[in-house]
Structures are given as structure tokens and as C-alpha cells.
Image 1 (spheres, helix red, strand yellow):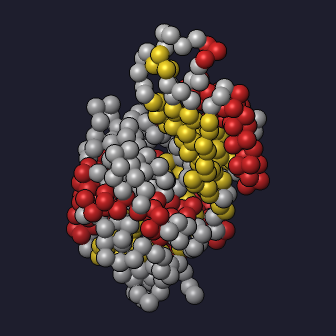
Image 2 (image 1 turned 180 degrees about the horizontal axis):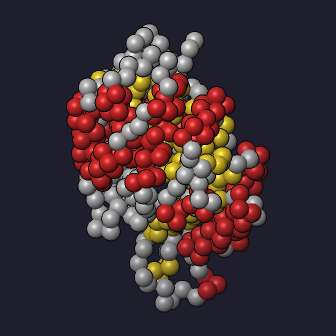
Image 3 (image 1 turned 180 degrees about the vertical axis):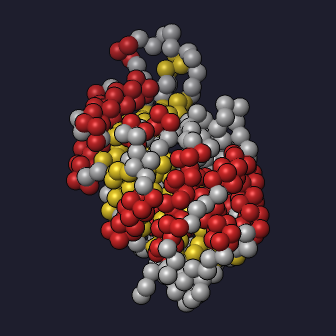
Length: 415
């Protein structure tokens, strides 16, 4: 039985590889733009594939473009231990969101080779397609299809702002693999990720032991009034869709603040038509989301928010079409997998605290079909989805060391 805490990753190699991936889609402000299924995403995938092949891993892709890099075990009839994250980013994203988990997984594989360790069960590193949701409006897309949360045909029919479907984008960059995008037997899944919030840094904790993820719901909305001349249309004749949208945005904020610090509510995308400085806006399209650790709170919002928003629209003579497009229940992670992370922190002496993830992650979908846990590292000022996103080499190394520890423990467990 391998005593996992005796082994160490190569922190410099890990950091150098992270920085090499960060050159792909690098932005002038120090972040990355690797939006899913674009040419730059193709480049990131190609570099990842090259590294995997150099590490002697067997690489395959499924029909959603999810990439799987496998290292055999002593008993390949056993279900594999899975770990990974995503390489796609926001349009103005940071170097570490998602990429840390994938590159850390690669470092785990390289370390196992360095040490000549053959795990009892096979181990498999995953790069999930389109975790971010910034292009097609549906987050955690690849893992959702793999876990059976959303039908593949539905996801592949989604379109971006230029009308390109997911299916077309997969074909365009050659990402679509031969095998079906559906889960097969697996022992467990672990995902390392930056916290994307300020708690670990504020409390001087090295590791977040993630016990689950909060519930969330996304809405798409269209608010329709009448575009008209800005100079000749008096107030009592205006049907200003943007003014109505402003009231609904403030409603989102009020609902969020009513839940205290546990609540989240955001409008992050707004399209104005005709978007001219001297025309009263006639149509607004926007997306909004709410998050909370309690499913009951999200259920109340799903029932309440559209009604209150419709009342605001009607008071201005506007028509509102609002639809829930994405909903995830509060997701508890597996107790045994969480305990492995807890034990690893204790053995390795890392200050840690247990926490619920405020962000959605591929682990949320994976947890619906196999035992799952997550590991968080701090990030500077809690900043993420931003080019200034930052972590230290020591933080990256600590998180990856925990990942190695739990993967070894799980892959070598008896029975």
C-alpha cells in the first residue's frame, strides 16, 4: 500500500507548465482569452494533448470534446479515479481559473512517473468542454452531457451570438471525438480549483475542503417596448425598455441583499436594441442568475422573481418574456472523498477550512453520478473572472500536493 504523504510533486515544473499554458490566449493585461471551441481553445487543447502524450498517457475525446488522459493501473478492471477541470476561459479571464486543476492533474501524472508508482486502479485526467458558459450561455456544458444532466442534442443546438451552434464549433476546431459523451463506471472524481472568493485569504488558510456547491438558477429575458426618437418622444409617450431593465436589475440586487451574505444575484449580460445614442431603446435582452446554499430559497426565487419583474415591466407598458434556462440543485459532495481531503490536509500540515462552493464547477454535475470532492486554493483578493486573477506558486503547489495525496489514497484503497 503506497503511503501517499511520503511523495512530493515538482512545484517548479507545475508553475512553469501553468505559465506556458497562460501564453495561449494571453491578453495585454496579464490574463487569458481562451473562450471555448475557438481557434485559441484549439491551441490550448493541442498543447495539453502534446504534454499528455509526452507523459505516456493514452488520450481520447468524446463527442462533446471532453478530453480524457489515462494512466493504467495494476488492475485495469477497476474503475478509474478521475480528476481534472477545464482549460476554457472567460473573454477576459485569468490564468488559473480551471487551468490550475488540469495542469495540477498533469503534474500528478508526471510525479507518479518520476517516482515509478503504479497505482492499483487506473487514473484519468479530464479537460471538460466549456465550463465557463460565456459563449453559448450554458455553463458546465461538457460535464452536463457526460453526466446525463442535459441531452447532447439540446446542448449541441445552442448558438452563440454569431449564430454558430455548439455542434458546428466542435467540428470547426476538430474537437469532437468518436466515443459517446456519457459516463462510464468510475471510482471517484476530484477537482482542484482556485476559490474565486476571499475567504481563504482572509482567514490565512492554505486549503479549502469543499463540502458541496450551492444551488443556482439562470434566466434569459427579453423586455420589449418601442424604439423612438430621443428628442421628440415625451416622457408620457415613452416605452423605454432600458429604463425597465434598470428597474429589474435593481430588483435582482434587492432579492440578493435580502438573503444577507449567503445570497447571490447578478445581471452580467445586456444587449440593447437598436443601441443608438439618440434612440429610446425598444428591446433589451439580458441574462441573470441567482445562487444560494438552500434549494428552498432558489425555489422561492424561481416562483417569485418572474412575477415581480413582470409587474415592473407592465407598469411601464413593456412586454417581458423570461425563462429559466439553467438550474442546479444544491450539491453535497461525497463524505468519504471529503474526508480524504481533510486527512491529507492534516497529514501535510496545511491550514484548512471546510466551505461550500459559491461557484458552479464541473464537479457539481459529476457528483450526480460518481463520488466527488473538490479542493480550493486561495486567490489574491478573491478576484476571478478577471485578467488580474492571481495565486502564488506555493498555493498552487499546496493544492496539487493535496490532489496527489487523495488520488493515491483512493486509487490504492482496498476493496
